[in-house]
Length: 167
Length: 67
Image (cartoon, rainbow over all chains, first blue to last red):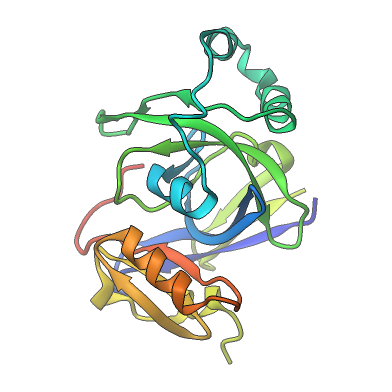
């Protein structure tokens, strides 16, 4: 992997809190879209509103609902093996695993886990598991699993208003 | 010189889009609004046959993000 830089942006107003943001390209089903994501090193998964999965990538979460067997396999999975699980899912017919999201504030929202590909900087696409949430109006968040695993460190340099994923 | 949609996003004062979804293409905000689906559909129609726009959700003013 090559290093990937990201920036801090104060928004909506230029006097607001600077937030670490990155452009991520998501692909699935031959469809591709660029989203601005807030980098959230505390989030297990990348989180995107479910409606975006439906209209941007044509994911039908209800029709793709995972069988009890797959759900059990995920629940009992040693999470260190999750990359193998994601890879296996993307090589077959990906399924949606019902999964609630718990926000740091304690609010729980329903959603699904469903794998997709992501491209950061000039690197190749990598498979990740996305938490597609029923929460309609949240900024897409870039979480750890499937992304941070590919880099040796992630630095946040607030003084210089930037940061890096380092190989 | 701004040469891509993400640089435009970083450079632009987005105060007036607080709480909205936006779509950026060719150094312009080509669609914005509270309903993300409408923003995506509008921007998709406007960019038909061209490069896809960059989509972003702008946080509301004076809100602390607890992620």
